[in-house]
Length: 323
Length: 294
Image 1 (cartoon, rainbow over the protein chains, first blue to last red):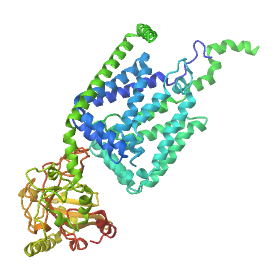
Image 2: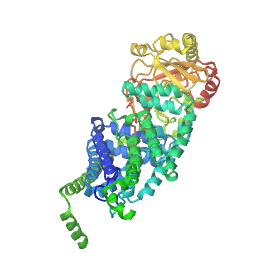
Image 3: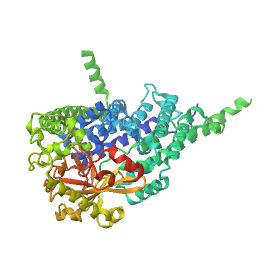
């Protein structure tokens, strides 16, 4: 189709998403090496809180895990960091992408269950504004979308087209994620009058002055009227989720998704509270952006196709067609 | 199996250096993980008896065992009935030893984490009853000036529990540090309910002269001091949660060097029947919160 000299479509490749995901995993591994993580704070302040309000079995497993970590905090933390660094490096090395993704799926599910308490789905605290349903699930979603096919795959579409699920599968994954967020927005954890402002105030605690100021200002503006904001966010989430499946041009929905995700990331997630010394990951914002990039169409390719008669190849062929 | 080994060797031979390093790292991490899991399991198992005994202490609330003290004054206290009933009895006298303040003998640990200081058993004497009444009346008169929360905060009372909660304790740490015990003019803490009409004064809370030192039982069995063995405190001494079943804190630190305390409820709806009740139940608080009337 594209002959010599034809403009290569500017597109996000699956490989670049793999590298992006790898970098995030490396960051997670480095965060695990923060000084506070080597003490009991990791068990007491990161793991145990996710046991609160969970069903008995879940709470018991999380508490038991916290005991195990507390028994050998340094060694456990080193292993946890090593696993995440291993996943990150594995994604950066082309040959080890698959085993690294498999390891990331297992690890992410474990983190989602034990570290994130299933994203708060079972204890009524799941709030998309603060990162529900849990960043770990998004690692899984992005990983599945960019799982490399045996064959070379489609090289002209979005990155997802190169993956096992294909372009359609990527869009379905996007829809599942965003419609899931839409459903969560409608739960009492978000729709209760002052829930959003309370969450913003909590998120602002301990953050740098400028960020806390922004968060508290928004919290003040919301006051007890967060219900309508939650409903609007839910509707937006559904539109963003279904948009790429329905509309011919998914770009606008992807950009809207990225914008909304970055809003959550800044306001509700405070950049994953990455400077708190106790952050384990940058939370959902960057992963939602990666997911958007994975299904982002090769827009330049479309424009290039429209201009193709001007390319040398087609120009050369033009007289034949004309004759 | 042999075929698998051959394929693995062939695969290894065709791998790049980076991939080989990655797989070597993966194998090392896997081995380290197994070793750490084994080590943590062993360590945890070794510490398990301690966990079990402490949780049993908290769970069995032997109100009818040990010294036998305390049950008389707790009779009729709605807040304590659940703990006593839930705990049942235990023949193990050690179960009356709290996880905190071992220097205070014959305490009774309730199922809800309250550690009751010993008091004389039986009905209060006339003198004890009179002293208790006097403490209530003096406290009621003295804290009237704090009916408005702003007056309390202006006097140096700061939140000692979640200020957004239904029931909030405000402590005056200067008074606490002074060791001024049972002084109605200078109560260590004030308790407010966050009602629909704003904060409403519920009562005062006196603290002992220092950690693990119950104050005087001026009212005999009526004025039983208590401590909590399951509270987690922030660095600024605010109660931020309760311990888990294993005795650890999700946030904050476990308050093992804790004060004994005595509440005096002065709100009219409480003063008649709940004067010294260690804590209030939701059903006792609910009418006040709903109406803003104490």
